[in-house]
Image (cartoon, rainbow, N blue to C red; front, side, top):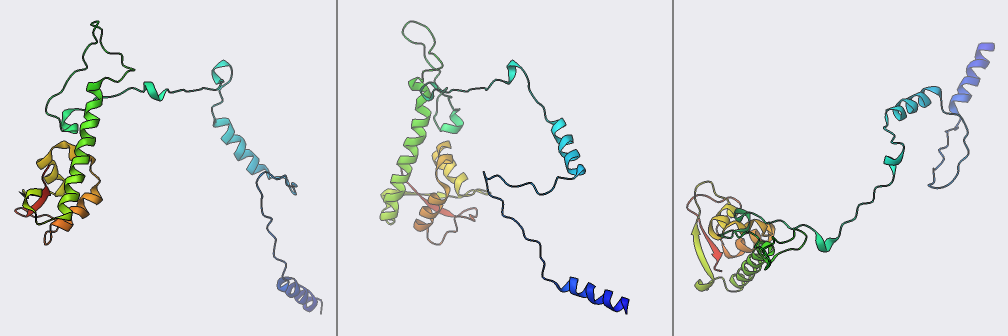
Length: 197
């Protein structure tokens, strides 16, 4: 009889709907600590904190970095990137002193202007070609070499400035004027219309 009562009480305990409730943690709100963390958790935190480097003394002062955008250093790109034929070294100013590195010279600013000018010219010529694709004065036909993709073909045709062109726009725009040619998978000998600059 005792075993039957014990069994019934165990079944009643097992069938109860006492699910643990989970409290929602809110940011920046104090919560009551209901139980202490166990010693293993505290020991693992201590071992992690001991491994952290802690700087003490004068070296640990806050580091403040400042940058003046108007005196940012400028770099001259090589002609293979800009597509220009010759390179010019920054010239000395009128007093014979070399130009200060903080002030951009006109020679240093030219490569980026050349790249921007090329992109502008190319997109304008491509837009004109799209508006009148049968006008022979707006395009030239280039034959694909072995192992070339569209952007290698454009680089061979126009120079290194093509690497800054927006790929998706150029691919979709040139596809619209090259019906029947799969520009994503070019074969040797394919003829591709490209805009005249």
